[in-house]
Image (cartoon, rainbow, N blue to C red; front, side):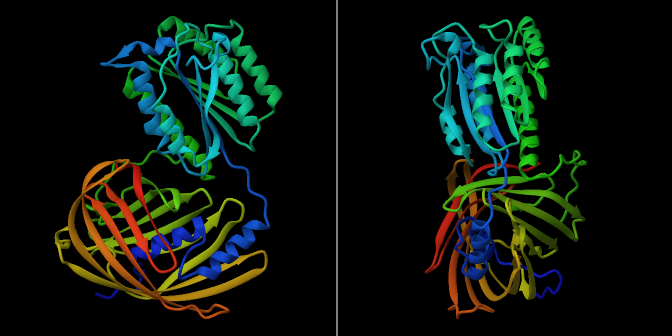
Length: 460
C-alpha cells in the first residue's frame, strides 16, 4: 500500500525522537539535538508551576469508610491522581498530624520535598502514611508551611489539601494563612477538599478558605466525590503546566477510524510512562472524523520539552502519523518536521494482527531546527519491518495486561550534517493491550537503548 499524504511514520523513530528531547540520544537527528542543548544552555530556565499536596494524617483519619480507613482511601485516591500529573510540574507532599513532631499543634512535615517530575516519589511516600497518635489537627500550620515551601520556587504556585476536618489548634487559622500568603508575595492558588468532613467542621473549613485569596473548597462525602474533585483540580494544574487554558468539556464520543482496539486514539485519552527516558505523558486533545477516515492530534509532555504528533487513520488501520514540532519551556518551538516519500502502515486493523503477520514502512524525515540565528536541516531515510509476535502477560505499574507484542527493525541513513553519520539500525518491541494502548516499549541500537512502562492511563 502506498500513502502520499499525509505520510506514515515508524514507531521506533517516535521513541528515538522523544529520547532526543529528554536525553539527547537520537540516532537520526543527533546534530539537531546537540543544537537544542546548546541553545538551552544559553538561556535561563522558564518559571514552571509548583504544586504541594497536603494530606491530613491526624487520628481522625482512622475512621472507617466503606470497609477501609479514611486515610487508606485518601492516600489511594491521591496516589492515583498524582500519577496523572504533568511531568513539567514541580511537586511535593506534606503531612499534618502524622506524629513527626512532638508538639501536636506544630506537627507537620514535608514528607517528599519539592522536585521536578516527582510523581513516583510522592506515590511511594503516600503508601507509608499512617495517622499519628495525637488528637490535634494542625491544618493551618501545614498550609502556612506549604506556602513557605513553594515561595522558594519560581511560580505559579498551587496547594492542594485533602483534610478530614477543621483546624483544631488556632481559631484565627484563616487569618494566619492569609497573612503568610501576603507576606510571601507569590502567585498562589489553594484547593481544599474535605473528605467526609462532619457538617459543623465543614462550615469551619469553608470559613477558613473564604479568608484566603484564590482559595476554593469542595466537599467530598464519598470516595467517588474525592476522586472526582481531585481529578478536576489536577486537570487544571496540568493545563497550567502545558501553558494553555482549560479546554471545554468534550462532546459525547463517536467512534472514528483512529479508535483502534489496540491503540484507541480518542479525544481525552492519555497515557503516562516512566522509564530510562524519564516520565512522559501522551494525551489526545482531538480525534475527529468517521469510521472510514479520521485524524488525531497527540501531545507528548516531558520535563525538558514537548512534542506534537499528527496521526491519520483509515480502513488500513492507523495508517500514518506526522510530527509537527518539538518545543522546550525555555525556548518555545525549536524544530519542525516533515515526512516525504512514505509508504506503509503504522498499525494494521486488529483482525490482521495475528502471530507472524508482518508489514513494512518506508519514509524520509526532513527536520529543520532554528534558534538564536542558527539554522540546520537534516534528512534521514528509514526502512522498517514489523512483525506481530503473539500475546504475552505483562505487569507494569498501571496493572497486569494480556498484550500483543510487536517487534520491529529500523534502518536509517542521515544526510545534511557537517560530518558523515553511519547508517544506524534499531530494534524495538511494543506491547499493546486491547482497549488500553501501549503498556510497555523497548528499543536498542549500538548507540542507545531504553524503554518505559505504563504507569497510568485514561481512555474515555
